[in-house]
Amino acid sequence: SQQGEEDPQALSIQEGENATMNCSYKTSINNLQWYRQNSGRGLVHLILIRSNEREKHSGRLRVTLDTSKKSSSLLITASRAADTASYFCATDVNDYKLSFGAGTTVTVRA
Amino acid sequence: GAVVSQHPSWVICKSGTSVKIECRSLDFQATTMFWYRQFPKQSLMLMATSNEGSKATYEQGVEKDKFLINHASLTLSTLTVTSAHPEDSSFYICSASPGTVTTEAFFGQGTRLTVV
Image (cartoon, rainbow over all chains, first blue to last red; front, side, top):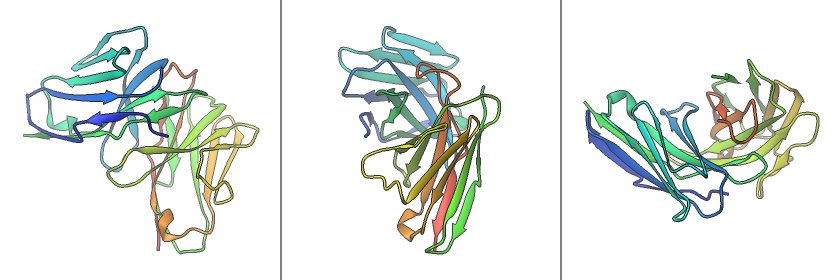
């Protein structure tokens, strides 16, 4: 079952602007991951943050994790048209299974 | 990164027929693979965990006789949608990880199934 909730559901920004999306979850986790999905395609792993980490960077991506609030955020800086996609957070519940959030659809306008 | 290949990428079939979808890990061995279903503009819903050499573990509400899973080798899992109906039309995605749950999951390209 899904345990992640994401907001906003959709986001439209101008190229060059930053995009921020949030994810909340319900149970304890070992790690939280963010994935990107282009329309009609599989998912691509973006970044993994462990439960004992608070912030992580990868290129133009910045992820934060607040385990006390059971929430995470993904920031994409200096967005590009190619960043247009759906973004999902995923938590490992148990037995190596991932539970995905509802996703945020990001549209970057040129 | 590791590569997971899913085939076919799309398929159209008639009601009542069966469709097999393959998921292969191309450059690593996967004792466990996962099958997800995704409806338009929605998230991924885990259907089942495919275990190499043993029976798959199905999530609550997923009919195991409807969605047959076979994981006969460390690099191949198959999902067969039996006696397909239009309501089975969906996007099916598999994933696998080369390591433990603390490593990323690699996803296949997905299969768009349309039952007419």
